[in-house]
Length: 335
Image (cartoon, rainbow, N blue to C red; front, side, top):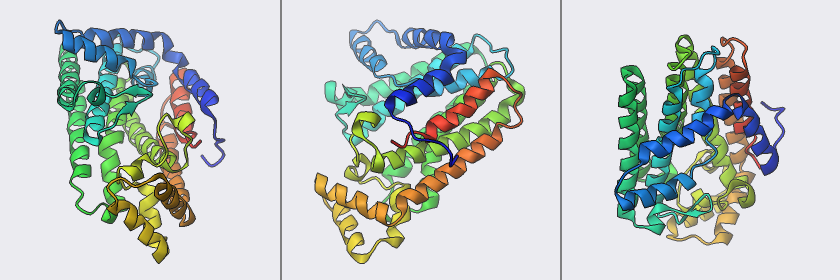
């Protein structure tokens, strides 16, 4: 992965379109399925659902589910419903995260908690989960239902792990990996494994392993972006994790190597209820100088390489090639 060249927003979006090419027509049906799953007669639910579906992202996770189902070139139609469920679960986690973090914007749009209320945000996240699971029950596949409910459980445990950290600056690297495996990798793993059961069941274990390593690399790359990214590219302000006192791999790696003066500034940031931009920028520099960003990049590359290795048993196909390209896309999000 060291030969990957970072792309800007336009070329990164172009790369994603290329990854989605083998399943583009089916992705359009995924959006239709999402609308059908969350449709309700209650006006407030219709209003909030309509806003949420505008906030859907790049459809990366449902893309993975559809590609996994196509690795034997005989995807089943039910993979479309599964992909819709995956994206609705992802949306549910974002709604809950925004409420917990009191975030005002998501992808340039007001969050549910800022536009409506925190109460509605929490209940709407639960609604998305319940409707998604109801759609899975309708598929009549107990094993897919088990995989996805295990994901829902992992997502909840991940959030509790984060909230339960008493001294965030004592958060270890192992604890960080446990957290991101729950909060991020679990859903990507579940999308790939359950997708395989919709047309390529013999590749289930291979695709689950691929999804786990890809998910870990994805979150590490995302956490690096908080230190290095341009808001016009990432869609969120830099230093947001530090502003919210979240400890991620770059900071974990930097803490033992920071100078006493640098450590004092980090402690000052975490002691401040609302750290200012200058202090955040200063700590970003301290983390970079201590090698935290480069360490995180190396670890992200290791997970990305493991994802590449996991794909090796799969037969050559457009879907397999797209899954391989998805690794580069994840790691290219460095600018």
